Length: 186
Image (tube, rainbow, N blue to C red):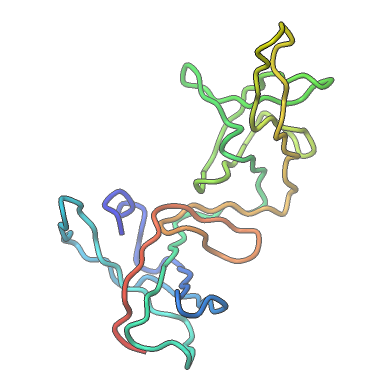
């Protein structure tokens, strides 16, 4: 795993394992060990982590490439917006919501992020439309046209952040750098 992920990964955290050769197979596991010394390869420092699957599958063979998503945080039942909707200025965050068809800046408090979505802890409500992209018109003084608006998610969304891509179960998100390595045994 990348050196920037190491402070967030702990022994005992859950992980999701996916295999290049078995695209329909996903196994759950847990982190059992994290190297305390990094390995330098072409100037990049990385750390090895051992993840043991909770169950085994006969189709997994030694030498297969596996990607691991380690879940470092989980926030159940949260409001999330696409990362492209969140803007920052002067140390505060805001999103644009559609009010009478026009984008209006709305200050928000953000929580965790998974690289695709960001948790909003206050400032907007479920059901409001959030602008994810604006396109400026160049031929007149019409201003900006909102496009790519997104209806805010419901209360059953779960957002997690972690090292290694998507993690958790249905409706749960993880983030970070995905790690692949060849397994040592089956």
